[in-house]
Image: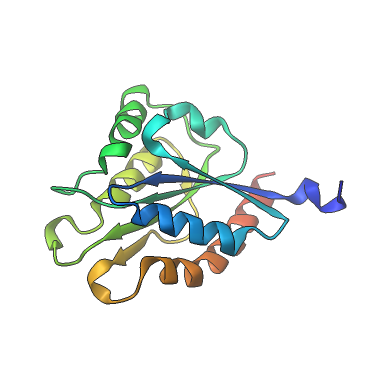
Length: 164
């Protein structure tokens, strides 16, 4: 066992997706972050409930927006469980990578926004800014994730250092 294992950062990526794009972003981030000192696990939101936040480490909500600014179908039960149970998430540190399309101006990136607002209401502390990828920008979300991922990982490591 290496001496670095004590300082290993654990990141759990929670994926809300309709078409699989958010999952592609999560896979890209796993590649960017998985350097031996950072352990990444990606979980689709389908089977999750509020207890997922009992895990160690930091969380990244990676979600698209669906319909009239809703969270994706696979994220609905998880989102509603958090709203109903209202767990105390004050020890939770998280980030949000939202996917959207600015052509739907009224509801642009609402999937990420809804999770962000709910987690903050429950006491969780966001690391960095909420990312709002725009599908009509011509930049692929996984390319944006690559660039953004390194900076966020540094912020996440700082947040963990402060809270331990």
